[in-house]
Image (tube, rainbow, N blue to C red):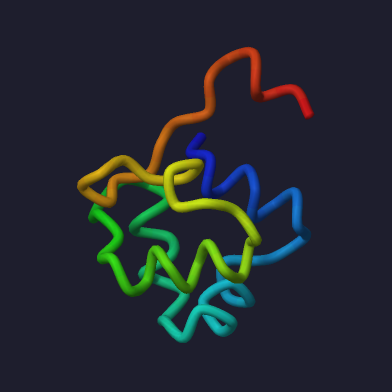
Length: 75
């Protein structure tokens, strides 16, 4: 599980709702969460603004979503 997915779910947002708030199609959120594509800079900024977290909390320097560490999985 990626940190993006974990935080999105903790905030009670669906991929569709996050996509709407971040002005992107929900399939882009899905592809990013499943590490099928990196997240481009402008979208990283919008996603992080919606979720109220820093970009470095969710993404590496190339825009790939970070994984949740085992000890972080339990809320």
